[in-house]
Image: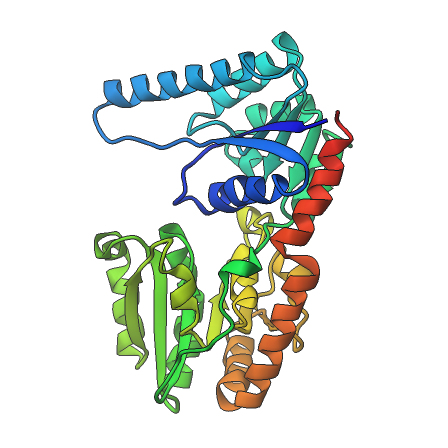
Length: 351
């Protein structure tokens, strides 16, 4: 019997959660006896009428997909079906109660902090909930006991282990989405201190155009004034893995806030998969991924950021050993191939 899975996502390929937890995961599930089809949400530009019509048409298209599907097909919602959480709740209710489909809800952020009523009801009404981190699992199990942790995983086949960095100095990398640039403020003083005695370049790869970097110009100028060279690199899906090859140390700063406590730590996993030792804030899921001193470093304050970065910057052997341990950690616990098999086994029990 072919296990059919309809995958609905709240974003498009530029959205990391959609790309990894929906599209790439669906590809790997297809290698584990699942017939998968992915429906993403691509936003459009224009006035409110044009955007509203597009959203409504997208909603109807996804409803029709469920109506016309095999009655045994599973409905997998990665965060939701688009940008409006209300439509995701309606979609889930219709699929579950009117069409009698089993619905899986995949969540990798604390959506219940911004839309508590909707998110908690989707969690309650789902036949199965998949979460990306330990803190999320604890929260979700208060509303639905049938919940499992599947980390946001790395497709190791996409990463080259060949390092291309040549020349003097250390290249510190920060790869993420534009909104996460604010977290770099946590590294401003430590990097400024280290730049007095070390040749440092901060490579920021978090926006698809230079225009998107403009809101953070004052932050980048502060780094420059502190002696840290800053290179802004536009992010693209085709270049991401190439750019990772040219980074010596990956930075993953996070404030210790409620939203951050539930984040799933893929920034760290991404560095580790590429064979880059991460230095991360000791917050949330980072504490489960990074074994301090073995496959990366965890930092609580400016002093620890300064001291631990200095160790990695000064000791090339330490960087190499930590990079090997980081890659091994991903292979053992955070690889797409391994976790897709686990997810396939969990989903198969719903048929």
